[in-house]
Image (cartoon, rainbow, N blue to C red; front, side, top):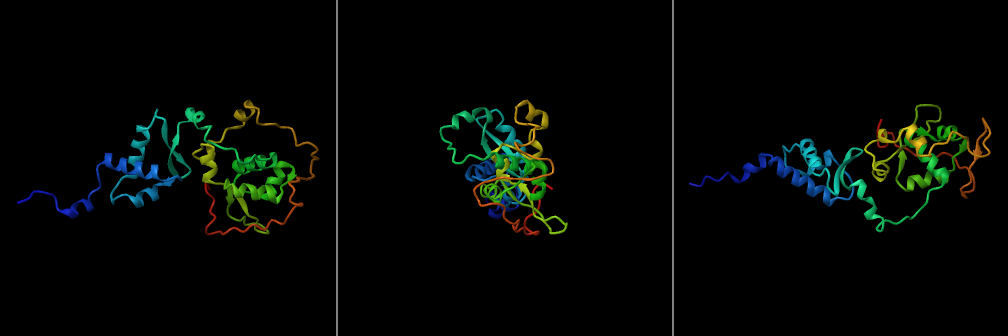
Length: 226
């Protein structure tokens, strides 16, 4: 009489940890976008311990040319930071951000969730519709919850794509004030021509300021990191 296990028994047993690691490795190599723990669990056999497998897999790739990194609430394989220069010939600079876009993006990253009027108050300059639209088009920011204040203005927050592009796990990994000053990226001087208490319009060629009519769905546009 055969001593083999019944055919269906494997359906009720989680594979060994080494096999779980291999499965997750295959999933992450086959997908371009970071995968959340839930997305990975949905693809694996019942009973797999995704959290433990990710810890082992991440450790196994330490010191290699490719690292397993956490991006927001997802996981992905990325080239080791010190080897990024090898990819420079493959990358193409398709768009250069204006100073207005860079400042607006930085304010959203450090102060999220933040409204358009709050961005203007911090910058001391009105924010054009074109600047916000550009950042939305790049998928580096998205709409957050509406504020429960008169007019219910929308808020803006950074996206997982933003974190992935800049190699951050969460917004808390953004450089601090001292690091920015040491790198010469932080200047306490007001923008040229700024007058205290008066907003200066920024000209992006869009024909001036437009109403803040972005639409946010309270059910779908949850704060990403709130």
